[in-house]
Amino acid sequence: MTDRRVVITACSAITPIGHGRDKIIASLQKGISGVQPLREDELFGQFIHSRVYGTVSETIAYDFKRQHRKTMGPVSYYACQVAREVLEQAGLSTEFITGGRLGIAFGSIHGSPTVQRDIYKIFLSAKDKETYQKIGAVDYLKSMVHTTAVNISKMFGITGRIISSGTACTTSSQSIGFGYEAVKYGLQDAMLCGGADEYDTITVAVFDNLLACSTAFNDQPEKTPRPFDRARDGLVVAEGAGAVMLEEYEFAKKRGAPILGEVIGFACNSNGGDLILPNLEGITKTLQLGLENAKISAADVDLISAHATATKMGDIIEAQAAAAVFGSNPHVVALKSYMGHTMAACGVIETILTLYMMQENFIAPTLNLEDIDERCAMVRHVQTLMEHPVKTAAIQNFAFGGVNTSLLIRKLT
Amino acid sequence: MTRQDIENEVRDIFLREFEVENPELDVNLREAYGFDSIDAIDLLLEIEKFLGSELTRDEKKQAMDIRTMRQIIDYVEMLAEKRRTTKG
Image 1 (spheres, one colour):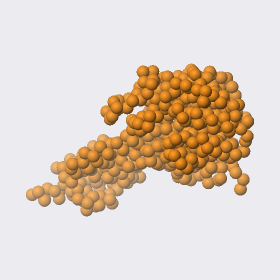
Image 2: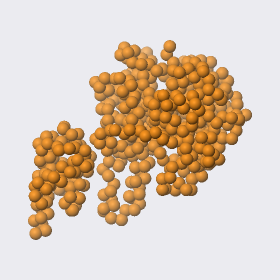
Image 3: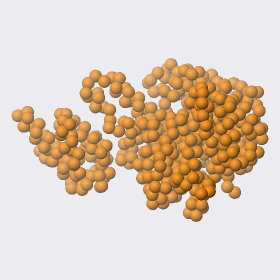
C-alpha cells in the first residue's frame, strides 16, 4: 500500500493572543503580546521570581452539559472547546465521527494540576473519614494524564484510537505527528489532534527554580519573552489549547472539505542523554529526519517556526541546528514571543498560526527581537511584519526529557 | 419522613446535582438522562447526607441494580425505615 496524503481540514486555538482565527491574526499583525502579570493563586506565588504569565484573558463559554462537564478539569474544558470548534468547522458526519475511523491524539503535560492540587490538599489534611470522602468519584478522571483525549472521545462519541502523549513541550507536536502517521499508514481516515494546558503556578515554580524563567521584565510583561534577542532572560509559562483535524486527502477532497494545508513530514527523536540541556546533535538530527520524511530539500522550506523559548542556551543551539540543516534562506519566526510557552499546546498552536500565515500570505515578526544575539544570528530572523507567501514551513519543538520533533506542512495550491 | 418527602428530596438532588428537571418515575435513567455509574456514586453520597447516616458496603451494592426514579425512592424509603426501626 502506498503512503496516503494527509491534509488539515480544520483548526482552532485558544491562546493568550486570542481565541479564534480573526483575533489571533490581528494580534500577529499588530504585534500584540498576551503576556500579563502572574495571577495570585494563594499558593507560593510570592516566592516565584518570575512574575509574568501568558494569560488567556478572553472569557471562554463552557456551555457543555453537566453530563460532559462532570469529568473535566480546566484543561479538558479547553481541549473540548477547541475540539468542538474543529469538529464543527470540518463538517464531518456524525456517522463518520462515531464510526471508528476517526481517532484522537491529544495531550497535556500532566492532566489537571488544579484538580490534583485539591486531591493532595485533602490527602495532606486527612484527619477523619469525612475529609477522606471529599475525594470525589471523578477526581481521577478530571486530572489523569489522558483526561483531554478521553473527555473529547466521550463528548463527541469518537470511537477510534486514542493517543495521549504527555511529553511536555512536544506533547501536541507529537499529537499531530502520530496522528499524521496513523492516517498516512491507513490505520485511521482522520485524526483529531492537539494539546492543552491550564493555568498552573507549579509549572512556573519548576522552571523558576531551574533559573529558566524570565524575571527581568516583571514590570513590563509584554517585553518578554525575547527569543534570539541579546537581552532574553528565559521563558514565560502560558496556558492555551489548540486542535487540528487531519484527514486522508482523497477522503477530504471527495467530501468537499476545506483544505487548509498538507502535513508532508514528521520526525521525532530523543537526545538519549541529559534530560534538560538542549542537544545540538539530537536537534539537528530531528530537523534532517523531518526533511527526509517529507522527501523535500532544505531549499524548499521558506519558513521555520522555531521552538525558541528565549532561554540563553536553547535559542543558540536551535539557531545553530536550523542553520546547519536549512541554511540561511528560510525566514525564522519565534511565535512564543507573542504569548509565552503554552507547554503541551505550543506545537499545535504554532502549527495553527503558521497555517494562518500561509493562508494570509504574511510572516509575523518575532516580538521583542530588537538586538539579535550574534550567537543566534546565522539564520534569517523576521523583525518586521512581512507580506510574503509561505509555501512550505517547518515547525520545530523540543521538550524536557530530550524529546525533539519536526513537522513539515505545505500549502495546497 | 413520608414517601412524598423522600420523593421531593430525590427530585431536588436530581435537579441540583445532575441538572435533571422532573425526571419521570419509571423511565430508565441512563437511557433518558444519561445517568451513569459516576452519577450513581454521587447519588449515594447525597443519600448519605440526606439520611444523616453512612451506608454500609452491602447497602451500596444493593443500589447497583437501580434503574428508575421509583426504584431510588423505594431504596431510600427502605434505608430510612431500616434506620428508624434500628433506632427505635
